[in-house]
Image (cartoon, rainbow, N blue to C red):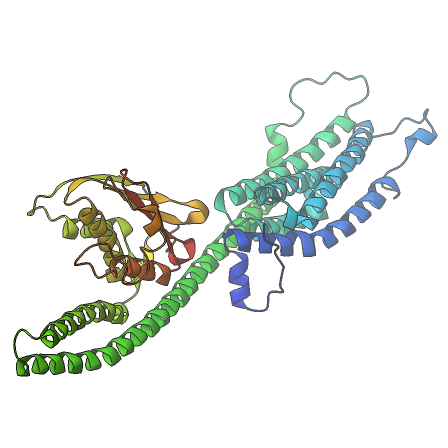
Length: 475
């Protein structure tokens, strides 16, 4: 797992990075909120709580005089329960601190779960403090506002955030009701039998609008934080999309300029050689050896001309716009072009498309050309008859895998490393540029292409597009 380093938030761009749900950004956010800031604040809070619970006058020690009967026994009992609960709370926080301090060595799923659990424990323990410090009148109420903001900053995914913030509201309500229950129990004379529930509907009504306004404030803060987070995530996605489009446009324009320049520089000399050899062939007598040599020159010039024409296809990389390309749609279009229904190839196409495949940020023609060249390679290998399996699936780390397989004769082991080399071909009329163009087009978008083959059992080409070239759509 990579080590995350928290950086100070200096701009809106940095703030947008903190709300991203990408694993790297989630780790960075957790490091900043829970480790760099949270551990320091939590350490001070724990010291204050320890003093408050064990050393202050708020917590009288009745063990010094066992015969002394407290006037409020229920409150004293609750106080002791809270003191013991603090030790458990302290243990949870020590364990979480070890996780946050060693975040680089901890598997990533453990970290968000630790954040989730410790947030619940914080809210639950705060409910106990609310119950022991006045309930509805407790000044600690505002700490729930801070906990909700902290939850939104640490957890960017919707469901855990909703669960945590709803729990904060319920914990506060439970703390207030617990305070009412303690007060009523202490008001009952010793030995009196309790009939019916301790807390009644009258108690809830007596809390008045103050209670409901406070609950509404907590819900409002949670909704506001979530809304702000959604807005920042949207702005971040738009900025990332614009940056990705601009980067792809610059890369494709550079490749196009280079290909056009090379092709132009080679085309002119070949044209001169071809014209000169044609003229020379006309001026010499038939049957001479020189005529055969000139013919060879012309054939090689024509072959080179075809290669350069294919190379000029790279110059088309800057035509059109980088857009969101549907991989399934482009694969189907390539299948129709390579296996047109009118030709009636004896080829059976087997399709396996996973749902929810995100679009690819690319030039549409580049992707279709890559698919078409691989399919054409399969068609020629099978001599127009056989089976082709096409598959689009979700890969690791939110990548997308496109595989095209056939049951042709396969690729000899000695050729496996050569098939992506320019001009390498085993066919008489092949240019040797089909698969190199596929490799070039795929790598232009940060992808990779792999081949698996066994003689007599066909070949499988797998194209992998990484997540950073895919347009992730959130619902």
